[in-house]
Image 1: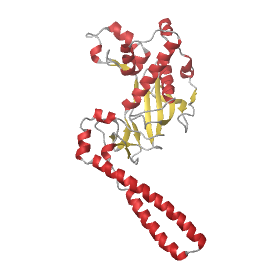
Image 2 (image 1 turned 180 degrees about the horizontal axis):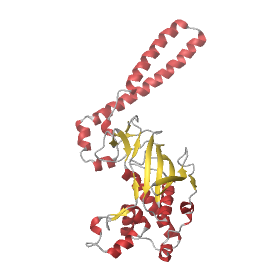
Image 3 (image 1 turned 180 degrees about the vertical axis):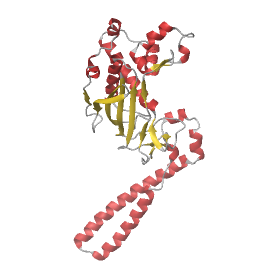
Image 4 (image 1 turned 45 degrees about the horizontal axis):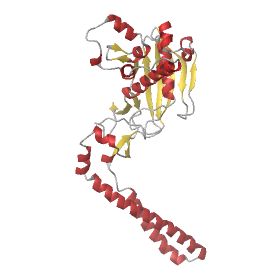
Length: 324
């Protein structure tokens, strides 16, 4: 089965990726910001792993080992695989639907699923979120030196003082507004003009305080909410079981549709995919999967093709696969 999903990922919360060499920008291809394919592919791989693991646990089967979990979730490592090519072992591993979908470095099995970089429109404007956390320093040990050299900490102290002044100005403006209301009630118009000028002066000063401080060394770039990226996912020569596992994984990810780094603040998405099946090089739309306008409002699933319609009936426990 040739499976193709074409659609979009739309930022519901700001999106970024945690790459140590991207401090003031995001990945770009042909002048467009992108969601890196590995960021999304990794989320889908972990989701299909969770589908299988949940089925095993529900069937009362033993927990998988840490090594097996690493192999299924991350693809393992080349150093952990066999030193010589073993055809029987290759066939065994490649028949595992999780590993056949996503591949494994340890056994040199190429995955059948391809996830393209999802590209935003060229007019998307990146923004900076002012924030720093310990993880940023562990990723870049030189960050603390850069911040000290650039005077960022001195700027923070200065900004704290500025914030105190800003708070004071706002309180003064509130008090002036009350005074203006009193003067209007008492029809003291001569005094009113004078106090309006005082208010205008303080508002100008407040505006300059709000726009004066920026610390790029203590922030990270994001794509703001409401921006749509074109997304394509493709599966080659899938069995019905593999297609079912992928669809279950996509839906599992869709229950918490997060992509990207700095997950304490970023990365929630809306998604909408047309599902297509290819026959002799031509693709026919056979359904749609989306989460509407609310990432937690439920997933709408409409699949009409008989090879996909019973995707939710497949048992992914170990006992089932041994019986098959």
